Image 1 (cartoon, rainbow, N blue to C red):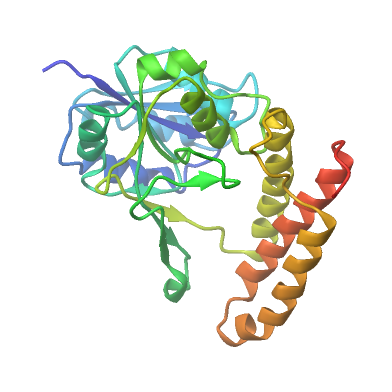
Image 2 (cartoon, rainbow, N blue to C red):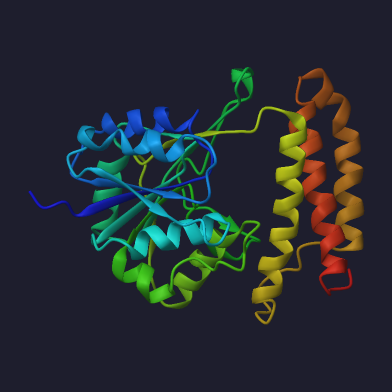
Length: 287
């Protein structure tokens, strides 16, 4: 049987977490795929570890070097362009795909150009905070257009080539949202596959979570600036909306403390603060 799916895993220093993702892929109900690990400059044993899994996959596993330019968008693009399978699936090295993931993606791509599925948000050490995002529908961003999260996306090769891959200038994030928006502009279809679920592991320590959300806040503004010529996209932040958000946040903070939700509350505040700050510093005065 000809292998018609490539699973791409962009990685940088994931040697401690990658084995659980590779194990999950090895336990798929649909095994007709190959794996490509795109190494974005690892200094640990990621490459050696990935190379040792070759015999476990029907289509094999290979490693491509994407260290020339940092960023997950570049890592995904390099791997996609180094392969020729008609269906491209992308997941992250620190997450875990569910057993039906490949099969559900295959079924979804029979009728859609791009497919995504549920993300089970996992919080190590705090399972009471676990939730499901994107459980039944394709998500949207900025109340504008749909997209497929980059850690759980399937895309036909023709669609990938039509949109030109991921925008590598969006190095801080939102490159998956941008790809979805550009795909819709071309008339491509984004679908939801219930069985294409992924355990999406959240950052457990507060410092890492804050750094991540500060980057995401800036990335949100960079995405808006790229598409700001479209009047249907609302500005990412303003004086009024920011003050209102932080007022509501302050009112809800005691409840978050009582529920043991201080870390996500602080991370959310970091995102909003970054988004407001960069709305000004990247050239847009707040409304």
